[in-house]
Length: 141
Image (tube, rainbow, N blue to C red):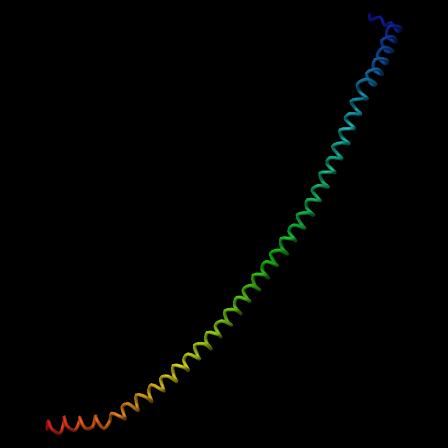
């Protein structure tokens, strides 16, 4: 049969407990502290990353707002420039129409004067024309 020696067994048990206590203080406790510190560090890093994501979302929102305002401002500036260009073209068109209208009036007056001058010239030559006509057709007949 197996003979149990309680003194030896209790000695091994005491040595086991002493060894377990030494290992606990030298290895297990530092490892557990390191694991807890790592968990704490990972949690703080995760919180910092989430804060950075929230901040980035805010910045992206502000950037989108600024871009939207810039687009609206650019559209307003384009519309204003287009309106000013149309006004300038219309003003120039009116000026050119007035200028052409004045030139037409000048041409009409010149045409009337030329017409009156031609009419007077023809009327002045009418007796000579009648005389030649009479000579040509009466003498030819």
